[in-house]
Structure formats: structure tokens, C-alpha cells
Amino acid sequence: AQTVTQSQPEMSVQEAETVTLSCTYDTSENNYYLFWYKQPPSRQMILVIRQEAYKQQNATENRFSVNFQKAAKSFSLKISDSQLGDTAMYFCAFMKLTTGTASKLTFGTGTRLQVTL
Amino acid sequence: GAVVSQHPSWVICKSGTSVKIECRSLDFQATTMFWYRQFPKQSLMLMATSNEGSKATYEQGVEKDKFLINHASLTLSTLTVTSAHPEDSSFYICSARSTSVSYEQYFGPGTRLTVT
Image (cartoon, rainbow over all chains, first blue to last red; front, top):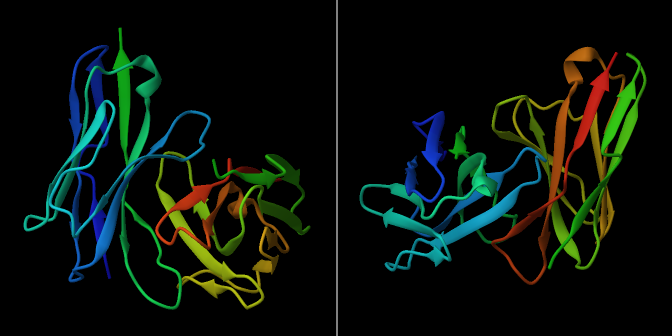
């Protein structure tokens, strides 16, 4: 079974600064996806960024980028130029690729990020 | 973009009654839908996976007779909490996977259930 660990329950960053959220995972699979989801106070889950394990290049989406270290099974999220709207719970998630039955997401415990003025 | 709706967004029911939550994919067909439960300040816990036209697959520890899932069409899945008790009070979230995009799930806005 896969496990996803987020060791930072809470983090705080000042507006316009950069913050990095940590995530490690444990799997014996070779083909999988990793995701970061954002859950703001509205509780709507929003996909922030996705990384395919077979890609060596780190994914980026505007102010969001990841540092994917496959050998170390690490997948951190960097948020640059933090904005007040980035305040949310951030979940790291793992999904192995399977044929037939649908692949399932395994979520970490989350990191609560507070962006301050 | 892909939109998933849930209805109701908030429901209060009395202990012993049943409540149904609907999950709809509005602009795409979803062969697979997922139901999650989230307690306050905790992560999402997968309850079950439902495929259109077949029985749902429940995660270990989830009572299938208590949480009835029906996925009758490519755009609708329902979760019925039967004989609800206060400990069933939680936030329930559904997600749907498009037939054309195998790796991405689109999440509904969630339903807050309070059992009194």
C-alpha cells in the first residue's frame, strides 16, 4: 500500500514571499502520478499541479512549481510570490497507474498554509 | 472546464433517518466516481469507488449496507446514508473521472451532513 507523508501540519508565509511545502511518499510502483491539491475555506478541492513519475522535468504552473526527487520519493511544492488567496489546506496525493479498475488517490494529512500581510 | 456538482450542499437529519447525496458531472461523462469523507481538519478518506452500471467497491472498514452507492448513469452517482447516527456527521465529497482523461479527478464542492 502507498503512503503519503506531509510533515508540516501548519506553515505561515508573508505575502510576496516564497514557501515550500514538503511531501514524501512510499511506494514500490514505478508508474504513478503525484499531485498537489488546494482546499481553501470553501472546501472545494482544486488541483494545483501534477507530476508524472516518468518525467524527470519538474512541473510548473505559474507561481507553483515542484521539486520531484524520485529516488528519494520526495515531492515538494514551492509557491512563489505568495498571495493572500493562497491561504488554504494543501494536500499531497499519490496515484499509481493501473489497468482495469480505476486508479485511486492516496492523500497526505495536509499542510495548512496561512499567508499574512 | 470539468464541473462536478453535489446536492445538497448542507443537510441536517434526525438520527435513524436516511439521507441521499447526489453527485453529478455537468459537462463530461464519468465512468468512475469516488466518494470521500472528511472530518474537520483532517484529510480525505476514500469510502468507495463506483463505476457506471456496476456495484461500488468499498474501502476496508466502510459499511456497504450503511453507505449505499448507486451509479446509474455516466453523469450521476448517489450516496445514501442509511439509519444515520450522530457519528455519521461529516463532510462528504465526491469526485468524478472523465472517460478521456484517466489520471485526473474533478471534485464536487462537498456536502456537510449533520445528524441530530
